[in-house]
Amino acid sequence: MSRHLVKEILTDITNRITVEEGKKNGQDIPAVLRKKKVCVLFTGYGEPLDQILLELKKIKRYGYQLMIVLSKEVERNMGKDFFHKGVYPQRIITEGDQEYLMTLMEEMDMLLMPTPSQNVAAKLKQGIQDSLESMLLWKALWDGKPVWTDGQRMRLLHGKQSRNPILTKIVEENMLFLKESGIQFIGEQGYMKEIIALSSGKAQSGAEVLNPIPEFEGKQVITEKDVLDVVGKADQIAISKESIITPLAKDTAKAKKIKLIRT
Image (cartoon, rainbow, N blue to C red; front, top):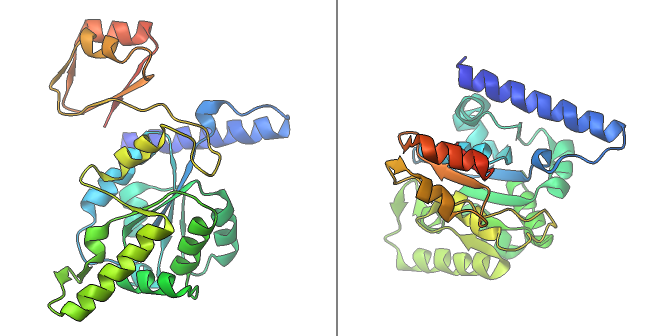
C-alpha cells in the first residue's frame, strides 16, 4: 500500500473520529470537516474508466466524500474491488445494500452519472423505478439535487453510434427529457469544474457555498503574482503536480492563508 493511500486513510479516520466526538459533546463540527457527499452512479460500462477515476480522485482531494453506486451489470462485470483500488471511496453501494441506499438518498448533496445507459434514460422518461439506479436517479431529481451525466456516452451503445435513424431519434428524445428534468450534461471541462461552477450559489440541498478554486494546471511555474491575483477571491489554488512553485509564491500563499493544492 502506498504512503499516499495510507496517509489518506488515516486522515479520513481522524476526521470521522473528530466529527463523532463533536456530535457526542454537542459541539459544532468544523466547516473543513463538513464534507459534501457526492454520489457517483455507474450504470453502464464499455469504455476505459481510467480518466473518470482520475477525475473522481481529484474531486475527492478537494474535500468531497465519494459514495459509489454500482448497477448489477457493472458489479457483475467489473466488481467492487476495481473501484476500491481505483478511488478508495467512503462506501460502495450495490443492489444488496437497499437499507443504506435509502439513507444515501437523503444525505447525498449531488449525483454524478459518468457512465449513463440508454436503458436508465428510457426508464426515467416512463417514470419506472424498478432498479437501484433508476430509484436513485429519480430520488435525486425529485429532491431537486444537482445531477450531472455525460450526454455523449449516452448516445453510444457498446461504444458505437446507431445507424438506425429511428433509434437515434428515440435516444435524442430521451436525452431531451433528461435535460428538461434537470439533469445537466457535462462539457469538455469535466465534472470537477461543473461542481466548482455550482459554488457561485447554494446547491438546492442547502449545503454550504464553496469558494471557486482557481486552477493553474497548465502553468509550469507558479509565481508570487499568481498567488496575489487570487487574494480575496479564493482561499485555495489548484496546480499540477509538475508545476514549480517559487519560494516567494509559497511564502505569499502562507501569509495570505491560501492553500496550494496539487492535482
